[in-house]
Image (cartoon, rainbow, N blue to C red):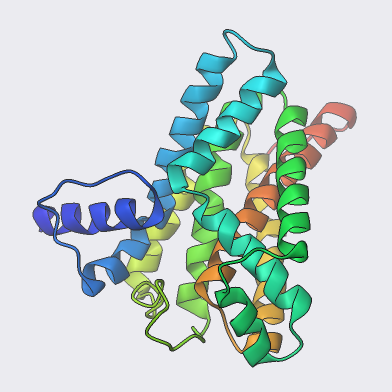
Length: 263
């Protein structure tokens, strides 16, 4: 049982990041499908690496440069996997007006104007959001933004229909319906770091995240009938920003409102 879980975990690590796994790991479609439950755990790893780079860089450089290096570390760890999906979604939904055209554009490896503009804005919003978060909340915010956003992306596999059926899709093994037990595992891994926040009121970040999930699900379903791998990557990136912005709003409310309340 333990050996099987180790194989499944390393399938997740190799697929969702650029971190190499041991040579003895058994890679299969079955293991990769089960590995979805460890998607938020990859967030722990990527977030942890980002935090370490930030702490080291902040000893030498100002906070803004340390944050940029931290963001770069996260992107290098995943190989820009989710950012690429976000850019493809910007191009596909920005330039396509039918399901077939949207899917065709998203499959194209080239990045268009919508993708470039979307990525630039995405990274700018992410950077300035991190810069705005106070130091006492920054590290936990970095960690949670990576875990919770990946949980939200993986939830689409549990609730929505995968629409790309061609054999060329690299995410097809992952896109098989997520079982209830696997989703509960992902739910626990993804939400547990929220308890690291100093106050339980920060759990309110889940409200805008759920609204984001509902809106994206409705939007994807309206135009293409479900989701693709690129949609999952875009969801992860959007959820990461929504999380950071929500932390800022909650912190500002607690700081400026004289009628502070605690859960």
